[in-house]
Structure formats: structure tokens, C-alpha cells
Length: 132
Length: 337
Image (tube, rainbow over the protein chains, first blue to last red):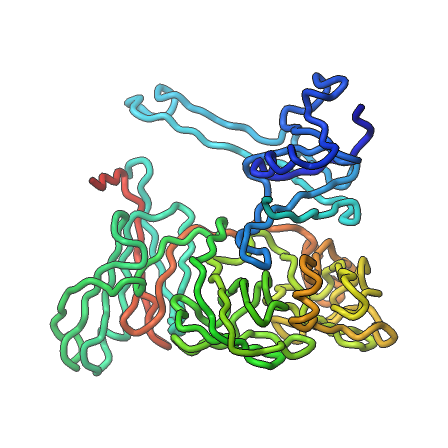
């Protein structure tokens, strides 16, 4: 059973260590794994761990110089994303015929109109860890 | 102009330190000209520098004016390793390889002895680790206040209490850049007991009047960092006396004195977290009354892409008061075999 929980956002490097945490529940052991998020790795206590390869790392920051992983534990509505003009981002691809008179080149670009914002910093904790 | 090409140019007056030229388009080649060296009556001054993609990072070529007459003939050679051009991307913090230290002084403004100060200059940020004796510094980022090449590094800002100090092995790493988002959280190394407490950070805080910060003062043992009454307190920056200090609207006179732990305390209580200040917003009223922009609670990505020019008379960063001109370009195609 996975109860209501806070999200813990962390780097993918931590998955092996998470597996070894006592009482850790793998996503496939959830009663309803189809309701889990794609990035979700599992849960323990009141935390559901979401992993990403761009999760925060402070390099060589431990006492012995090991990398320190920042695991942001967030409460509901601790942060918000305001999507301006009704969209967050657009990836724009122009094939050659539209991008030059000789149709020699393509172009790609993106527009980004989103404001992520911490709404209450007291509802976010940074759980710091090194690898086992 | 073809796609993916751009030429940029500019000028700066050198202060003999490393100079970062932001080049948002990225760069494939760069010329730097030292106008002062070209025209002054001193012998054998480096006056033109060149780098292009494919050359060793930190290298480049140099044209040196021979003789002591303005506009004398030039000679041409390669820059010594790590004295030239470095591609720069501050969105990625890359710590250097670990460098050995041999001693930390017994002072509130510690002097760290090391034989390797390559690339370290005033304002650089170093990360201390593996100190055998001064374990109270391990894991901490400190800003460099002074550097004696190949001998020592002095911290920029004073701690609440002197270091334990002593001759012992240790290490540090030089960070390639500061954190990319402003305002930045910083480690706190001193807080005074005053009606408006003065807070000192280990690295320049960059705060302005009106910004709000939250204190995070961990409780480790009874007397460790002290001033745990401040933990979780939200404060407004009232004044900024220096780059490493600021005052807040919190009366700390009745609070426990802030302290920096001894090495023995640090060793006995690992792991622990350092005291921290986290910028969380701004007081718009105070900001407006001090003619500070009210949007200072915004978080800005201040990362830069560009070129770092090593400072010095024989390098593209130039010597003090040298007038430097530069052009940089993005090539249509780079074919490095």
C-alpha cells in the first residue's frame, strides 16, 4: 500500500541506493502501478521518489570530497509553474523549403514562456546524500 | 552571411585578472589585441593573441613586439600552457582535480598553504575537503581573498571563531564558476549579536537591500554553530556593508552566540550541514524606498557562454590598465581532423 506522500525529486544515480533502503516499495509493487508517474522509482515512508538524469548534484561537496545528491522533498503547492499565453514551450522545426530560397537548410528553435516559482520555501526540504 | 556564422567585437581595460567575454553565439576563433603594449615604449611586450577551436584549451598563439619602440617588428610563438584562452560555460560547474594543501593557519581568516594555485585568483571559489586536522572546513566553499602564487590562499571573509589550524595534509578543488541562478544560497560563517544582526557568508552573497532570506541553522550538539534560535527565521536585508556581509531586520542580542565548530567537534559529529541562508523573495516596500528594483525577488539564470582570457602581461587578459580589443567569430564549418 502506498499512502499519500510527498514527492522527492532526485538524480537517477540514486536508484541503486534507493533499492537498498529498508522498507522501500518498488513501483511494480504498488497496488496500482498504472497510477504511478513515468519517472517514479518507488516509495518509502511518506516519500515517493521521482528520478531524472538531470537531478541536482553538488560535485565533491562532502567532507571526504564525494558528490552530494540533493533530493528535494516537496509538499503540495510548494511550487507552481505559470504557463504564459497558454503554453509552456514550443519546439519549432522548419523544413528546407520554408527556410531558404534554395531549400538547402533546415532550422530548429524553441520558444519558452513558462515561469516556475517556489510558492512557499518552507514546504521544500533538501535531503542531501552521497552514494553508498 | 551564411548560416551559423557571426562576428563579434569589443574592448575592455584590463585589471590584470582573468577576463570573461560573454559570447552567446559560442565561438570558434578569437583575436585579442593589446593596444597599450603596441604603443608603449617597453621591450618585448605581447600585443596580439589568437585561438581557434581545435587548439588546446588554455593555449593559443602570441605575437610579441620586439624592442622598445612603438610599432616595432613582431615575433610569433605559442602561449605557454594555461596562460591563454579558455572556453567558458558557467552553466556547468566543473571542480578542478583535487589539489594538495599542507597547512591551515590558526586564524578566523584562514590561510591555506598549497603549492598549486594554478588559475586561482581573488574572487575564485574553492571547495575544501579531506583536511586531516581542520575537519571543520571540510565540504565548505570559500571565496579567495588573496593568493600568493604557489604558496597559499587566504579566505576572503572571516569566520566567527579561528580555525583549529596546523600542519596536516588536505585538499581543495577550484570551482570553474559560481552557481548559475541568482540570487544564490550561501553558507553562513558568522552572525553578530546585534539589534540588526550582521551576517557573513563564506562567498560573496550578491544580495541587495530589500531581498528576503531564510536562515537554516542546524542543531548538531549543544554548542556547535550556536544561534539555533535563528533557524527557519525569515529576514529582510537592510544594508549591505560589503560583498561578504549584510544586515537583517532581526534582533539577535538575546540569542546564543554564533560560533564555528572546532575540528574535534566537527570530527565527532559528522555528517552535519553548514548554516545556510536561502534567498526566498523580497520586501517590495523596502526595495522601492531604497530605489532598488521591486522585481529583485525574481530568480535569474545568469550563466554565461564565452571565453575566459587569462590575465597578465604575457596573456590575452592583459596587464593593469592595458586597453584590449578583441574580435571573435563563429565559423560556418569546423573540420578538425
